[in-house]
Structure formats: structure tokens, C-alpha cells
Image 1: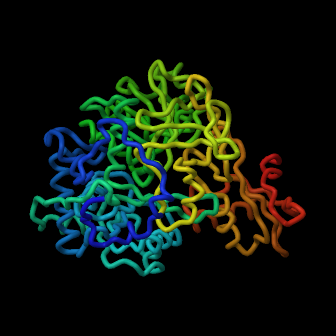
Image 2: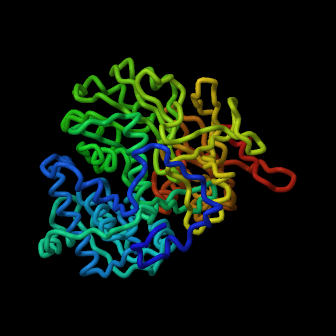
Image 3: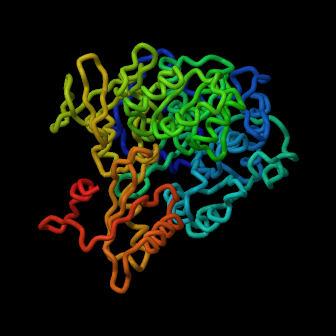
Length: 533
């Protein structure tokens, strides 16, 4: 790497050595980025300043307005809050214009964005703050209480600024009125950290995935450009928060890379998505398979005439769901698989290349294969999915780097079938991660939350088939003495989990059992619990 702009080298100092990182490929001409690259500048200042960048139920913002707003946020961070290039900035709030401007401002100031969902609880927030040694935070005031509790536990923050959604009357908004316009963005290197995206592995311990400035642009210039083929002026909506790299790509990076408009929804779900499509003329929609399935029954009551393109990711898209949506709307859903470690989607197909039920082929710029039990690439057949491309796994100070990167390949933890035509067909997850409605839920994390309730003597959590969610979280619980099973206690346990970790992780089903199945050595036999359903 050339000269670094980061004064604070905390992130780079905690990455695995080069020989433990994957092999990176930059075969496409559009992936040949200049050494000096600030992704925020590329995204927001390269287009027509008068073109619409964001629209929602509160208002609308042009590219020029978003550029000016993010400039003033960057100036405030640097001049008044003491942000140094390389410092980490915690962002918390639902998708809205101010959150997007804050994300841009952090990158312009040379900071590293650590964006999180507003549903995270205090303990989860504290873990992220401590892992990243986060010094600054910009937080939506409507979710500040849980954040403040987590911040007290972490003890790392030097600066916290709050805003009031897009209402325009929060602390940050008032202070920005006194900030001069314009800001000379920090001349970051293309291979300097731009963001840390936290995810959970099978142990429930969060993995911090580091993405460089070039990694922010690469999915737009590979997947979006070659598979989605965007056009200026299109309106994009996505159910995922930008804390998820799927949402970051579909709602911020891709629209702005190609002169489109982001339609933000603070509390997305099937009904709000349908409403937004009709009210704001959405042309491109991205959400999970379960949402597409849920929306089909309500399509008749909404104007869907603007919608032309749909993308699915987060979990396997069943062929039956693809066909039902296509029959109801005439739109062929573009399926895809991505990973936080890989930034975005790396296998997909669109148009006549779609094979219903298949995820697709390797996206231009990427190579994909399946590995046998000896980590050798197969020509065809079934094995562990392995990827190489312009993006790849860089964990922050985490020995699990060696689990994800094998002989230069990124090994995602998915089992796939690779056919003679180059298509990849999903078989199963290779680990105990539960994917429910597009969310990754680590079973041990839910178990740890349950163990915090006095009624729980022992427990195990697995994913079970669910028509609505793809998979549902189910807990098998052995009760402590003096506690009686029943619906009342099950509800108490569910509420306890919701109050301890993000509510979407709570067990939808609880079964009270006398004992958990174990091997002779005492190892929990989860497969028996899955079979029991």
C-alpha cells in the first residue's frame, strides 16, 4: 500500500497478515481504482447535484444537498469532535437521509464507519464498542437510551452526537446550522479501512469484517453493473438496514453509483414495502424471500405498476416462491448469495440466465467453486462453497480468519451443488447458523440469553423449517427445580430474550424437555433436536 492517510492505525494493525488473507482478483477494468480513493466522494459527488438522491415520507434530498450535509458533518467531526483519520465512528439509527449523510461524512473525514441496527441491546452495543475501540458516535435520539447503557459498559467513547431522524430538530441538526459549508475530504488510500461490519458466527461472538474504500465500490462495479444493469433515475427500496452490507449496497451504494434515488423506509416489512412502492414509484426492490412470499397475498390492493426489477438475498430463494412472484407480477426475481465478509453478492443471474431454484453463476469479477473434504476444488458436484474476487474476508483480530480463508479461497459456510453449466444450487448451511427471514442468528447467542433466566437449567437452540420465515428459532429447555412448564413461562422466556439481545433473535417456539440429547462424551447432539422439529 502507498502512503496511509490514517493517523490511527488501530484497524490495520489488527488485521491478519497477508498470507492469511484471501487471494484478491481485479480482473475487470472497472476494478482498477486509483491509489487515492475516498468512496464517499465517488458516490455522492460524481453526479448531477440537482438529481434526487433520497426520498421518503418526510421529504426529499438532492445529490447536492446530501453532499453539502455530509460535508458539514465531516467538518463537525474533525473540527469540533476531534476525529482523527482512522478513528472508528459508531452509527445507530433506522434508514433515513441523516443516517446516510452521517455515513458519508464519516468516510469523508477519514473515519471508519461502524453502522449498527437500532434494535441492538446494551450488551451487544458494548461488545461492538469495545471490540472496535470506538471513540465517536452519531446516534438517532429515538434509540439513545439503550445506546447510552451500552456506552457506559464499554467506556471507550469520547464523543456522542444525536440527531432526530429526518425531522431536522435534533442536536446534530442544530449544530450543523453553524458549520461552514464545504470540506476537503481526506485523501484516503483505496486499501484503507472504510467500514467495519459486525456479524455473528456460530459461537455468537461477533465477527468484525473490515472493508476498504475500494471494497465499497467493487460490488457496484461488478454485481450491480453486470447483473442488475442500473439506469439513472431509477428508484431503489430495500428492507435491510444499511448496517447490513446487503442493505448498504442495495439502498446507498448502488443507487448513488449509477445516479438513482434511494427510497428509505424506517420500519420496513411486507406492508410498508408495498406502500412505499406505490407512493414513491419504486422501480427496484430488494428484500428476503420470506418478504416476497408474504407480499403476494396483498398485491391486489397496491399499485405495483412502477416496479420493474426485484432482488432476493439473505437466504435461499425457493423455486416455488420465485414462480409465485413471477406469476403474480411478471417480474423474474434476481436471486443471489453474498456475505458480510465478501461485502455483497458474488453469485447471481438475471434475465434469460435465471434458472428458478438455482442461485446463479459467479458474478463477473469473481470465481466460484466447491471444495471437497480435502479442500480441493471440484469441477462439478457438491461441496463447500468457495469464492475469490475483488472483495474478501478480513476479520479484525480474530483467529476465525483461518476458518474462513482456505488456500486463498473464501469459504462461506454454505454447501452447494455446482453443475456442468456453471450454476450453483444451494444445499444447506455448513454450520449451526440459523437464517430466519434473511437474518443470521447464532444459536449459542440465543442460548446464552436464555441461560440468564432463573428458570432455565439447560437449553439448546436450533433452526426448524418454517413456511413463513424459511427457518424459525426453536429452543429446547430443561427447567430448573420449582419451575413448571407452560405457555406463561414460555412467554416469559421469550420476553427475556427480547430484552437481552435483538428482539428478532428470540425463539418463536419453546419446547420443555426432561433432558437434552448428548453423546457419550457429553456433546450436544443438535441433529436429533432438528429431527424432532
